[in-house]
Amino acid sequence: MIWNPNKETMSRDEMRELQGRRLHKIVDYVYHNVPFYRHKLQEMNIEPDDIRSIDDITRLPFTTKQDLRDNYPYGLQAAPQSEIVRVHASSGTTGNPTIVGYTRKDIGVWAECMARCLTAYGVTREDTFSVAYGYGLFTGGLGAHYGVEKLGATAVPASVGNTEKHLRLIRDLRITGIACTPSYALHLAETMGKMGIKKEDIHLRIGAFGAEPWTEDMRHEIESRLGLQGYNLYGLSEIMGPCVSYECCCKNGSHICEDHFFPEIIDPQTLEPLPAGQTGELVFTTLTKEGLPLLRYRTRDLCSLMAGECECGRTAIRMGRIVGRSDDMLIIRGINVFPSQVESVILSTKEFEPQYQLVVDRVDNLDRLTVRVELRNEYMTDLLPELAALEQKLSEKLKSVLSIRAKVQLLPQGSIERSQGKSKRVIDNRKL
Ligand code: ADP
Ligand code: ZN
Image 1 (cartoon, rainbow, N blue to C red):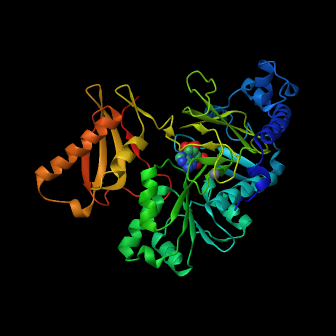
Image 2: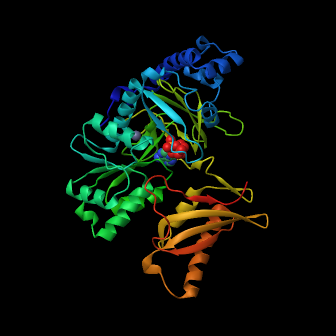
Image 3: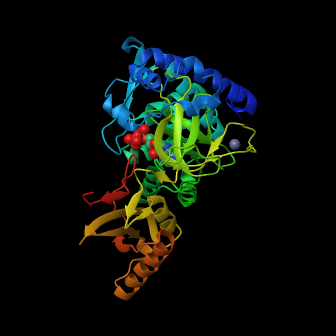
């Protein structure tokens, strides 16, 4: 099923034509309503009427998170406050939160795009769907919620916390779908084990997972533990919230709602656009947003765009998995290290729980990476040589993937703090 075949299966030419028209309108709109953009465009000698097709996008200035911070809280907002019906804030994973205002129309577009995502996962009006992202300033909860209602499924606003109560509801209400972070999905699975609930006792069949990077191995782990099909859901507050892109039944890249959010991939150093297939920084231009329209917003998320048709019938362009955030990338002894690389290694080693943390210290002016992992109960032993051998084995695997040596710290199962929302995988103690 496709929620909006009109937009999701448009021919590429029609889509580019629509994007071009919308781009012209949005440039005209920010030029007249956001002094920040008017000054930038004037400095660059660009008039709104110079922007005629989507190819002209490369002439436009970029917008960064710093620009939003410099203009905190409402400086880049285009609509008057009387038109704003809601504000959210980014979760501030990497600093001060960013305030995002939405008009009534923005909220409608968001629900529409979220309904596209859910339909692509296979959710229908017959489903009972639990939204286990946090409700509040974070966009996850309310964003997913409005989509579930728009689609006509039954929304259960579980939010986060109260995991045992939530699990009882999952069982008793025969909940069939859930949206949450991948790390929370694992936490649910662990708690189920403690409560004695088996995956055969529940009816979950679809999971919409996102808000933090996750790997293919993590997908398999969650799917087998919860007995469902897990799909990627991507979004960010500055652009809208969850709904920006979604996987379809093919699970091969996430389709972007590109009639609303125009994607580009750039080289983060030179800022030059990169061709499809190459990994770089993802950049979005909002084509229809009224509250906080953004031109070429640098997400700092690293991924690639995938050209070509998808077997599901959608023509909307796909993005690959987020391999990391440019601000999540650790530079250790000059080498780029992403938590996702460590995750892949750990999840492919049967002795460990899918929980880990990277700790970076600087000792005698040298960076030292420690990877903390949990040893599964069944592999726990008092025999020190066996433990040492396990450490050694993991350390060697990490070395071959990361190209640097990491110290491995084995912990008993359950010792790393479980996250309800976005997990904190990196602790950088270096004063850089
Ligand atoms: P913050 O930047 O403070 O975390 P948000 O709450 O808006 O703010 O989170 C958006 C970010 O979350 C994205 O830019 C991306 O880094 C991450 N994210 C969201 N969905 C996914 C996903 N499906 N896969 C990987 N990362 C994701
Ligand atoms: Zn598809």
